[in-house]
Length: 378
Image (cartoon, rainbow, N blue to C red; front, side, top):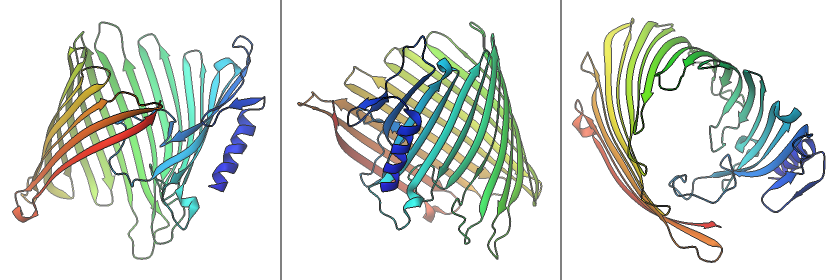
């Protein structure tokens, strides 16, 4: 944690060259008037990659022993908003390990705009024991051009694991790029076309571990349209995969709708179908799925959400035949404030059933319940 403090002080020096003021939770550099300022900067504490705000029962993950992350986020706006820079440094809290560097994360980002063009760069490195998106080294650049109803966005980057170069594990490197074109005009359907390519290669392969190499390409087309009380989207994708075993293809279709019969009620049904087949095997794998989600906000204090899903996976050679049924419901309400505390209570229930028709003895069924009390500061 001493290194984290030292990094935080360095961020303050870099991002706040002028006088700095602040309390225990938020520091902010005094900006010049908006009309003449070419620089504005802030330094903010973060918890679980989000700026410190009152806790919300909807954003908490079950498990009080789950390690959380704490860090410092420094952001600066330059040349009257021409571009923005961010620096974030975080580390696990409530979790001890022999290698403290493995529990840390560093992220750098730049976002800029010039007329109808926007662009950005991101670098992120997280240790193997970091609580969120661990053991990842990410470098990404993107650009977007938008005029009228049309927009074109391009992204390319590199992502790898085994950031500490552990000789007992291979490092999987992925080089990817995506190009998307969208057309969105009021009172017309929204159209989207996306091409993506992902090349995977393994390095630092230990003795006895076969190297990995694959190249995936996919094309996805989507059309969506909405009205006053509803939105709907139809997406279809086709992908090709090449690896040492041979080529294969994957097809998927998804239909999603969002219904708003009341301003306080949202219902979201989803249907999906996925087919996988590879040249090295004559087997075809079919995976249809369906889900239904509901969110109801009765008032500012009481809310209810529920989701149910069903999916199945069957192969043409009859070696895979599985069904999965699941559901979860959450009832949350906010109690009357008590002095400087704002208590929140939630009741959660979950059910999951996995049926293996080929091996009935492998069937699993889980039923869970959780009562959570959160005391958040005002």
